[in-house]
Image 1 (cartoon, rainbow, N blue to C red):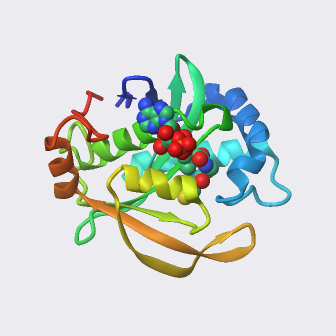
Image 2 (cartoon, protein in one colour):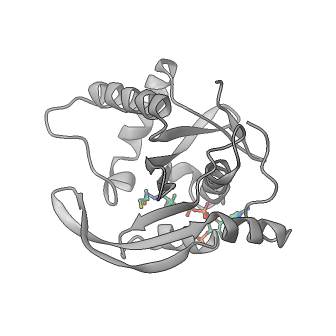
Length: 202
Ligand SMILES: CC(C)(COP(=O)(O)OP(=O)(O)OC[C@H]1O[C@@H](n2cnc3c(N)ncnc32)[C@H](O)[C@@H]1OP(=O)(O)O)[C@@H](O)C(=O)NCCC(=O)NCCS
């Protein structure tokens, strides 16, 4: 399917080969900004190879239903990405969120808009979405902008997972945030002021 999610300011869609140049430039320009809280490319891998891996994993995830990666564009300009990773079905029906916006796009509420739309997609019943039950986000305690974002989205802080993820060679503690589908619909029903609003079509 042609998967495209829209928000008032953004279009979100899976990456394609044609995104290579914009993706590479953003990686270079945001190396320090993104590298603090996410894994840097493995030594010895060129950024071109990293993009190829990224594209392959995006396609495999979508094909197998185990992950969905979206690039976000504002008026055609690449401003960030959001992913629903590690999707497990049956007794879990859960996805792990990942997010980032470029330094140039930060501080305008775009991340909030982008992630809210990805959560709408996660919870919407098929064919508009994935019909999941729970979405989580794992955030390093020093990542204050991401903590503010999770809390602005109404995600609950569940606890601290010790030495959970290896970020740049160190096993880092992460705060675990989550939201359940019924909590999300209740927040949307609460109306204006909620970040989600009505889900726009795919
Ligand atoms: C985490 C990250 C996505 C947050 O981006 P962000 O732009 O701060 O997030 P938001 O979209 O929620 O924007 C909030 C800011 O925009 C401001 N804003 C302006 N217009 C706004 C609007 N219409 N709606 C909401 N907020 C708005 C808010 O006041 C807030 O500013 P403040 O933080 O100075 O108080 C970004 O910092 C990032 O990419 N970090 C590096 C990568 C990373 O940490 N990834 C996650 C690993 S777990």
